[in-house]
Length: 261
Length: 338
Image (cartoon, each protein chain N blue to C red):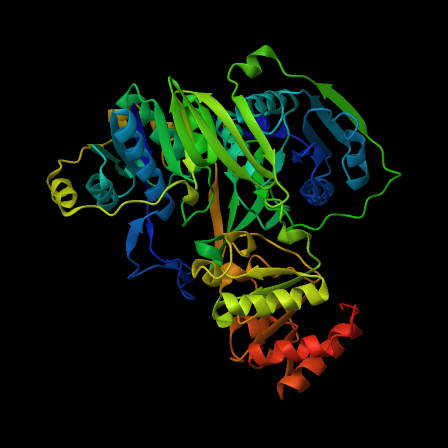
């Protein structure tokens, strides 16, 4: 099986503030990590390869420093890694990001399965996985918690609000996985050393035959027009202090006044 | 990519809602979305259309007029069972090209979050996930879509100026459902699946509906929720007693869930469930923004915390300064038998 695992470099913390003067997002000194959900995608890819043979290719789009997450993927057991990095990719929304990744997957060629994490913790959109499937016109399954390979198909189990379902998809396909699917391994020292030596290819738009009109800000239907801190909830807080018994009495009184209990 | 001129954009009208159908029923989030769509349609002098896809849904279609829908497109087919994202996406894209809606709203449920990005890509249009605010810009008629970013630390407002329709998802319980007006009527359009829509189909092996998994915090009228201050699984036992005394459910912050004190299906906040309860009692929850975005539209918020200065204590309607392990047993003594 030829498996592509998409990984994203994200900030380790969401402690973003808005600078009151410049109105820009202040994110200085925040370290970058691999999107936690992608660790499960990577682990699942490596497990499938170990069971059925083939190769795992880690794919990412981002600035040059995003190669760090690809080296992390290599050290965990990915066979190859490719970084899409160019100014032309900058400012991509989920439409343009999934387009670029889909073009790279076409360029890699003969891919059977694409695995993504359920969502990235910085954007939380969960749109890129199904977006890739749409650009490639492949079948998709989002939120997968179990996957088996059967001939040229996969059988996936998905959890949803009302229970779960199990269904079979013809390959090639795109799946997104949730944390329940596995426990990611810790990279070995040998893996880390090999990853350091790996000559990591960096692909530009021309390498993947991408239409420049569909990349970056040009190719993104959405525009962020404003960012601001969230509105605080307006509350005239009633503050209750005293002994536990007094507090309890006062609260029960307040709640009964409002017919809440 | 395909961008539209001003003249092209004018051909797009009406606000669409994609109904959430599961377990053979139209889910309440559909009514919440129709309520919001009604506001947007009134602001842009257009109509609300709802697309219902499912098996045996034709009879249910009429019920949507009462919530503010002017027209319902019903696609009744046994293959539309919530699993075939590929078919549902093809049908929606075809309907979008045929009727040209200006806005398409969809529920940010497991199903909606898988289906609608596929539609947005195929229909060449922008999509904003998990919106908490939607309005029409009076200057140019664009949909202004506000959503939390960076774990809710920042609210971002997004628009798609050159693409139509403008698509957005909204989580259940973020918008309020309107009171149904049974006297409202509307038009039903029947559409069907074409062979070309069903070129790819998953084989269904099992569909399992579990009472357990349906444990839905959002159905509770009262939620007793615990955070780091609950200190461990034993603390949650106290909260469970509190909840059962008042007929409520137990919720939790991410910190408590990450610590393994209670299961993920109790988690409230940006990465958990969004709730809109009548009464929310936060016990030992400091009130990180990612938690607040999941509960702040509750009617009455009570905070119990030993630290009087946390964000939760500041934003609560009633803030009790005290040790929850001492105060809650006293509350249980005070509450009359129900």
